[in-house]
Length: 81
Image (cartoon, rainbow, N blue to C red; front, side, top):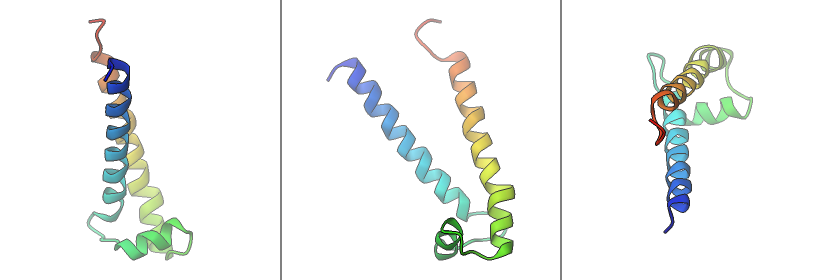
């Protein structure tokens, strides 16, 4: 396996892991949202309270965590240092 193929494989694996952890993070917190309620929310049929918690608190936190993690990783990692 070439170095480029390894890089692509690791990148895809990490993206899948981050996606799974993000979905898991959506359902955890001080106000527990079950998997069935989470599926209803993602399809647009959830309650107003669950939608508020998901869209205004949890989803922005997850997106910000991914962006900050990417920025920290790209700022100091790489073969050019």
